[in-house]
Length: 366
Image (cartoon, rainbow, N blue to C red; front, top):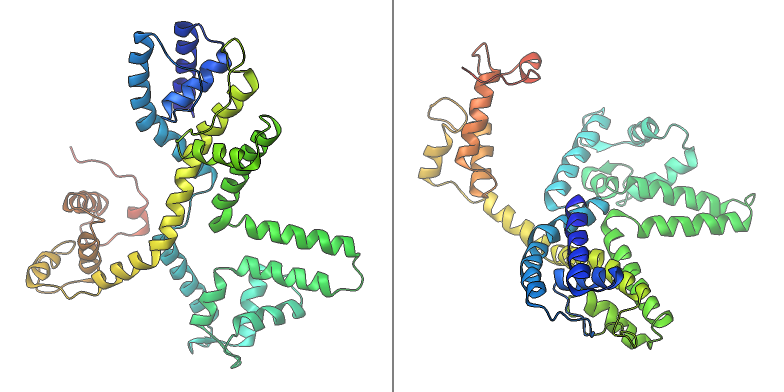
């Protein structure tokens, strides 16, 4: 945000000083030119020095500033789960399931499931546990298999809220207004879930632009929507008009500047997330195919000494590193750095790390 503020402030001050424009109009033009929108307005440059500045200003905005804004909005959305994160969650679910499976028979009994739920929610009632059990035990065979468990475990928080909502709705002692309030809050929490959050924010942002166009500019709904969408897509096909003196009024100038400055990277991230959802299954299938492809003799010769001393066998660590190399997620130079750091930590040269060695700071050799 510091980068963005320096960029937008320098552009605003320059356009105001060079073109003798009011600050709000200069701010509007700094966003308009810097984000390469090109609104259809009468706010235009006439001086060559101003046009020369704009060339570099656009290049800077399209690279560094655009990336900084996108990163800021992505952080504000708390990022978006990727297939790799989902695989990590699958491992966590497996570990939780195995710990709860005290009988080590590959399934969870009612008692094992109850013990697991009470660890995290000691106040939950027997009725609540029964409702959760019915949602997990989809095969209705009296036990919970891992496939059933992992399908519901990722949304355990949501399921608990569902149980709470059902308990409140079924209760006769709770006022109807309180039931309605809880129901609305529950639905809003569902909309604000991580996988839907960016769409909610985007719709609200576009809706704000449409509302402004209708209420402030007195456009019809189609024209207001045309402004909001084309502005965020950097088309700028509809824009506010200047007044009789050829100056863009303060309120429209500031609103359009802020609306586009944060809305354009939000628009790009939303479309990117939607595209990611569309191709996530295909990417995962391709990765699975690549990971299950047999090794060639050359790959075997490479793998057998990637992380372990040379011998005629491939160890698990060798196999994992090789697969990362095949996927392009790791380079040989990175492997060398990791091996070097391991050697620095392995002070007793046993080929393994104790807790004390693994948590010690890495001291470079002199």
